[in-house]
Image 1 (tube, rainbow, N blue to C red):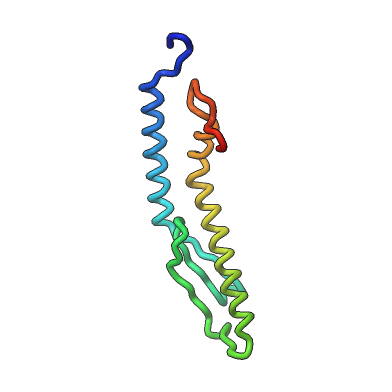
Image 2 (image 1 turned 30 degrees about the vertical axis):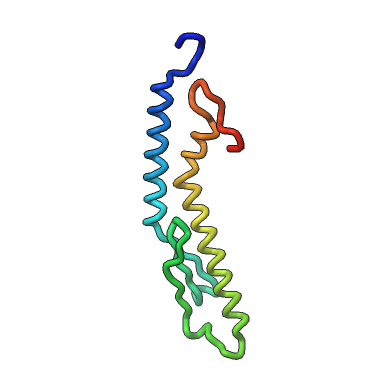
Length: 114
C-alpha cells in the first residue's frame, strides 16, 4: 500500500460484508420471538426480536374487577420482561457487528460516537 493508504477495494468488500451480516441479523431478529411473564405466568407477553408485540395472554384467575390495578401492574411487568429479553437477543445478534464498527477497519479508526 503506497503511503500507508488503505486498499479501497478491500474496504468496500468489508463494508459490503458487514452490510450483508447486518441484513441477516435483522432478518433473524424479525423472525425470532421472545416472551416475558409476570405473576408466575399469570400474564405473558410475546414480542418479536424487532420489538413488535405479537401476543398477550392473561390467565382468567388474574382478572379481578375489584383489583384492576394489580392486573395492570402484571401486564406492565410482563411487557418490561419481554422487552428485556428482546434487548438481550438484539445484543446477541447485533453485538458482533457493533464491535466491528467500533474497532474500525484496517487503516481506519472506529466510527465516531460508536
